[in-house]
Image (tube, rainbow, N blue to C red; front, side, top):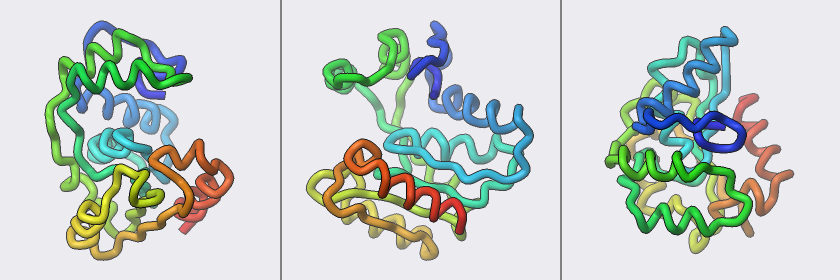
Length: 175
């Protein structure tokens, strides 16, 4: 998990997009993987995209999980919304740090290094963050992108249908 989420440490500082991306790169680089498939769900996709130039491994597949490639300018409204989500494991320190440090960042340029191995997963249009105009933009910028809609699923497709979600992620990673 990224810093402040799950069982990861929650430092007092280091909540910029680059800081969070460096965590991904540090793990991948530490283990010395020669090749990886990288998947990021929601804003995690944007954080993973920002990590791409920091990763020494060959990224053979990059999978965006229902989010357009930008890092949002989080605010107090977002923070309060996140605090209401049951079973979400994020520290108060992380929420405060993310809101304080967040600024809008388009990370689509980082995806050009994986453009021939770029995938996106989304759910039903009325329940997903990745909307038709986002998909059209991705297809224009990355003509080789493969986009798969998981019918009957929402933005939380991993929870909605974990079996189909994992099968799709594994298929993308293997291709």
